Structure formats: C-alpha cells, structure tokens
Image (cartoon, rainbow, N blue to C red; front, side):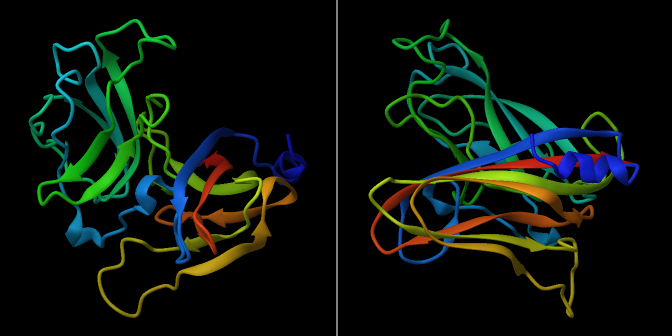
Length: 259
C-alpha cells in the first residue's frame, strides 16, 4: 500500500474504496494505442452513446452451452452514472442489444458459465467480443492461452454515481504497475481528459499526466502524493507504443472518494 493513503487521510478523505483498473495489450505497435485488447477503447461524445451486444462467436458460448452463458457489462450512461446489464450469449449468432445505451464500457465479465471452471474446462470457450450494432468492437474477453473471464481495459471514466447509488466526489490514483516483455522496450503514457460529456467547442484538453520511456520488465510506481483529483466525467488511462511488437499490461490503483 502506498503512502498516498496517508496523504488522503490527512486531508480528511476517509470515506473511500479502492478499485483496480487493469488492462493488457498483447500486440503493441509503433503508434500509441490504449492498453486494451486489440488496442481499442471507445470514447465517443454523448451523442455517440450506443447499445451493445455480444458478437457472433463460438457455439459453446451460448445460453445453454458449456461456455459463457451470460455476460455482465459495466458502463457509464449518458447521465454519467455507472450501471450494469446482463446479456445472454447466443453462440454463433450475435446477441440481442442491451436495453440501455453505453457512453463508456468499463468492464465485461462472464456472469454465468455452463462449466465448473478449472484449468482444463474454463468459463468461456472462445473470445467474447462486445460490439455495437454497426459491428465496431468495444471490448473483448480474451481466450488466448487461457480464458480470462473478464475484459482487460486499462482506462476508465469517473462516474457521478456508482451502480449502488453512492455519489462520487472524486478519484485519485495512488499507484500503478506496468509490465512489458522482458526483452523489449515500450513507452507508456498516463493520460486524462476532464469534462467528457461536453457537446460543443471549446473542449477541455486531453493531456499527459505521467510519461514513462523505454519501460522493460516490471515497473512499480508507488506515490507519496496521489495523482488527482479526477472529478466525475474525467476519462483516464494508459497509452503504449513500442518499436517492436510487444505485450504490455497496466494495473492502476484508483481510490474513489465518496461525496
């Protein structure tokens, strides 16, 4: 645990909980991209909020199959409130669309499986891809080498309220871990953009918060003074680039301070 907690407590911020925003990109290229599967993280304006569904996939990932039967989607709506929705899988067909529109997709998880999962039998058979009605990918639950059971999105948006109704005051980052293939180097940038719900210019700027060059192996950053505050509506996350194809992951320790 970093000294950032002592800094928060000394300033009277004792009503909080800790969340981990974790992501991975196993095929990092020379252009900066989000630390997410396929390097994809959708950040449309409010007017671009959309219903989501599960892309047609493996026959085993079906509502009556041996793999994933239901997927839990956690996101932010157009009022900047966190919410969740459970969608039935449909095997080789696309699922029905969600009933609510997603402004941001924060996480996707296998909610029900047809298998008692272990090493030999896992909770989903193939990749679970989350897409919109146009077929644009929004997230992925990877199955490469082993089924993950959850998405790996190294970015998030601060909500006004949590899905349980708790009002959010602000978010601080107290530390993070970055990993890159041991024999390769990558540049990582922590970025933030406030006021994501703006609909017309002038817009608030996206800016670098921290930049780490030529990272290789595991790098742990513990902060004596947290990064923030990030107010509700702020997007934040990691971008990565590498001179040669590399794999990268991040784990951000985010402290959500309750109002």
